[in-house]
Length: 360
Image (cartoon, rainbow, N blue to C red; front, top):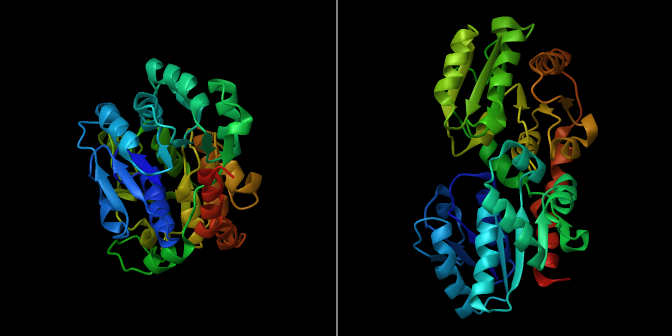
């Protein structure tokens, strides 16, 4: 079996597929992890038995011919790829190779949101529409994404398998107990600390989260820690200053172990405009932390069962988000969110992936 990715950079898809490679390896399968570029922090987490194949390409597009050669020469019976640019290249490489290898692609973001935001180029969208239908199977990480693949890219529903992202609660438990040095975690007496994790990019809509913090009834007793880096860092710091909450907000950068922060936070908040299936929401629940999320496409409503496991608010509504944060923190009671996190155990998800990879 082979897995194709651009790299093992610190994103959610890369984490899922590094874990999948390790899990398949432990099951006795020979696994090739084929990378356009052999880079990224998750390389250090790979099982020694996972064979890393570095295509040495300048980028995903540059990996087309090297990947076609790999597919032509490999003994692997199936290849799975993730992230839409990589999916397009993988399907094109199969056509170029003339191989009959089984091809599975994984779609992890909302096609509808990507179309509306113009984040995916017109050329890639046209190629996705033409090529996804040639895949032997398409994995969607949520029911919402499955529906949108049918509507926007013409994928047949029979081609699609909905497989949620796995969350390794045992691993989270081990890492959550690590000590950290942060003055707000755990929260000092009389204050509450909200945590958010994710790239500092428009999709995550941290501007609305900052405005919600400024509107909170808890005033300066509410702190916000954001883990992640990205292009909006300077703009977000300026907005925090304009809202007079700079002393309440810490953009703490990317952290290899966000679980140690989650376990010590008062509340986890997802403020995104759209998602695919946000693992960080389940990871926070696995740490036993209450959660609040926007009801964005797609994933949060499925994870939180329409609000049963945490409050859902409209996208971009700072006042509604502030009210949900206040209500959750002031209430102090809520469901046992660890129970819900257990529904996404890797053993459950691995069995679903194996069925798709084998064509069962």
